[in-house]
Image 1 (tube, rainbow, N blue to C red):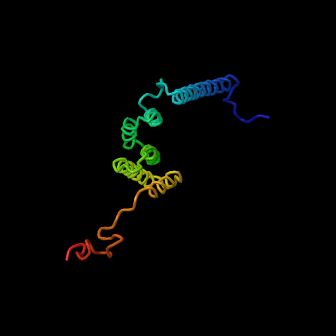
Image 2: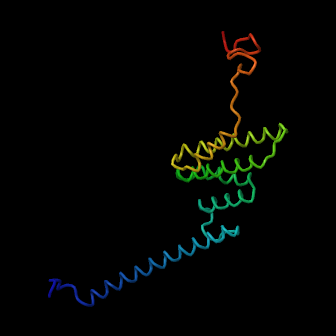
Image 3: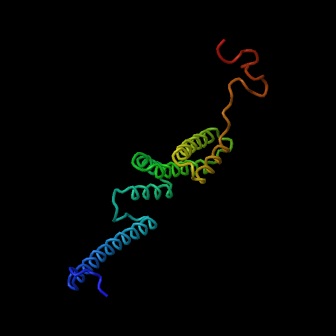
Length: 184
């Protein structure tokens, strides 16, 4: 059964198929090399060792900031994460803000305020920073339920903002008993 391809000889067909096989082999080798680099990078991140591949990449900086946060070097981690908020996609920036919020949230939870007003103020400041970071993350990516849940948790821990002129002993809108709030 002839296909009518008289210009295609066995030698030409063999040459074409050999070139395709060679290009496929090169592509497979390239993909295997990338896979090995990714595995080496992930192994180094888990071990907390310096990475030998992908230097100065987004993933490298993110992994380093995440590792610093796990080791409780919050100041350095926050600097790295803040730098990443300017250079990536909205979903990546949302992940960065989520992690910044987590750092502030965890740090606030570790403070034992008791009756110490200074410690209570520091915890409130950290919770406010976490709230701001979570709000930024939700603005960028509203689909992350973890961020939304953490934002709700932080909001429930923060004290409510008092309304000026409202207290238990005074009527609403009055400050110090008989002085009205606001301009006349």
